[in-house]
Structures are given as structure tokens and as C-alpha cells.
Image 1 (spheres, one colour):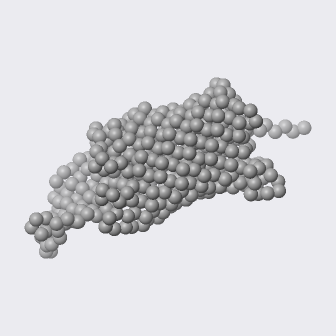
Image 2 (tube, rainbow, N blue to C red; image 1 turned 30 degrees about the vertical axis):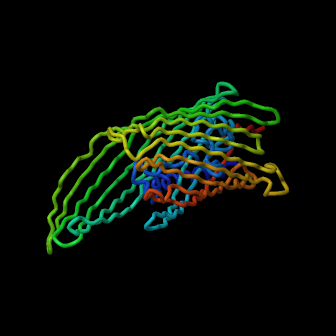
Image 3 (tube, rainbow, N blue to C red; image 1 turned 90 degrees about the vertical axis):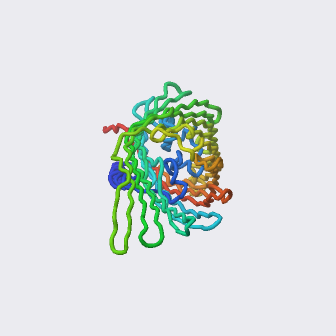
Length: 426
């Protein structure tokens, strides 16, 4: 790729970055489970490895941006510049013992670029979603005096990470990295209690949380080169109870309706005040076995201690420790085939199982997903179009809970260019 491809890179960045930034301020879910905690947590895996069950912590593929483990940035070739972006579609069916509903959500998902600084250092910048809130739930009840009332719970918002990453590789056997993230976003949670009948009142509560602060994630990869272009990699990531400053506001109002008039009264009002959120300790371990340009097999274990997280100084009774297990593989029949385009395609599949961070009356919500996808090479280039799908289930209809059957479709473009070649003119 030459000068014109670099112009395309710059134009794509100028166009996509505002679109991505706008997408971060829009909720990317309609799940009723997003009412609790920080909402639906986004996967730590993006792009290529979403088709591999999300297993990515030990991956060192030189043509990907692996933001899940910053130590992987040093795998990028010294002449390469990588630019990657993607979008995701979520299609869900929710079912309880009394009702069912469907939802569709499509949004830009991530934006990243990475390159080598020198022979032993690489860097990356990216914009990723962290969590999303988007729900509208109604519950009706009747009092002893036969007065009926309806409570509506609704909320929206997104928390995102703007990331600057750095990796150093002091030897061919070891790489260290860090991601400095600026975590930002707004979450609003509201409720309205509405009594039926005349001359009764409506109770309204509107709560809002604004998050703006920095955090740090560390990563490491140990590399064991083997014969015949094979290698074994052990990866690890750590984030030790990061603390974030937030601004919280809350208001409760009572609106009394008469036959031809109404009376609004504020029962409680809290202006925006500084508060602290203590996020959980995060530990991730991964193992990767690969043969260059042929196959890669990844296994991940990921843990977050959400039971010890603090929201405005308090623990949540609805949160439990998150544990995720993922396994995935990629196979390329013949990456350099000149006769068959199908042999140059990367075929990917995987599986994941997660004990999510949501728990209700001692019943933790579990999920599982089966993934598969393709990496389609761009003609006469190292760029790739990644397509993946995941089919899975979260939750159960037992214990008056909600089951979600979902399908996720991911589309991403990984654009590659050679930016750091000094051209000689005779």
C-alpha cells in the first residue's frame, strides 16, 4: 500500500472517530439485567478473536490490535501501521414465566490504531465501550384496599474507555505492557410509581451518575519459541481495584393529580456531588499455541471480584464475582496461495462460558456462547475483513428470572500499511 492508502487511512479516521465517539454516548443494550451494577459489561475481546470464543489474552498475532493484553502490542512488526474499527449487532429474545420480548441493537463498537516506536517498543490508542445500560421494565401490584399501581423502571447510558497503550519487549522471551484508560460516560436510572384512579399521585425518581477518571491496566506475555515456526505464549493481565471519581445526583418528586390540575412537590433533591467508585480486582490468564501463518489455539480464564466493588461507598447485593472461560482456534489452509482465495481465508471458531456479575437471591446469572467466523484477506494486501457470529444464552426462567437467547454479529476491518520505510532514490 502506498501514498493513496495512507490518505484513505486518514480520511477513514477523520470520519469514523466522531461516529465512534457519538456511539459511545448511546446505550448499546435493551437488557433488563442492565438495570443493576454498571449495566451489561462489554467483552474484553474485539475484532479477530471475537470469532474465537473471545480467547485472546495470550495471542501475539502480528497483524491484530489486541487491546485485551497491552503486552501484545510488541508483536506488531516494526514497519507496520495497523488501523482497526468495527460494529456489532445484538439480536435478543427475552422470556420469563409470564411474558416475552425481542430487541435489536446495532452500533459502532470500537476504534484502534497501533504501531512500533522502535525495535523494542510499541504503542496503541483506542476507544472501546466498557458497559451499557438500556432497560424499560414495568411491574404492577395491588394494595389491600384494591388500589392498583404500576411501577416503571427505565434507564440508559454508556461507559467507555479511551485508551493509550504501551508495550516494551526487553527480550524475545518476554513482553510487558500497560493500558492507561480514561473511563468516561453517563448512566441514568429512573423510576415512576403511578397509582390508578383519580386524585392520586405519581412518584418519580431520577438518578444520574457521571464518570470521568483515569485507570491503569498491566499486562505481560512470556514467549517460548519452538521448532517449525511454532510458539507457546503465556499471558496475564491485572487491574488492582481501580478507584474512579464520579458525580452523582438524585431527585424524588411527588406529582398529585386532581380532576383539572396538579401539584408538584420535591421530596428529595441532591445536586451533583463527588463520589467514589471502587472497581473490582481483575485477573486474567491466557495460553496460546500457534504456528505462524497456519493456526492458533487460545485458552483464557478471566476473573473480576465484583462482590467487593463499591458504588458510592456501598456494596451491591445484586453483584457477584465474574468468572469467564473461553477457548478458540484459527486455521488458515494456505495463507500465500495464489490459486485459491478460499485457502487464504482464516477459519475461526470458539466457545465461552461465563458466570456473570449479576446475582439475585443467591442465584448467579450464567451465560454461554458458541462462536465462529472468517477472516477475509483484502486483495494484494495484509488487510483483513473480519466477520463473526455468536449464538448463546444468558439467564434462566427459573426462580422468576429472565432468560435471554441472543445472536451477535460482528463486522470489523483491520487495515494494514507500511509506514516506516525510507525510500532511496538513485
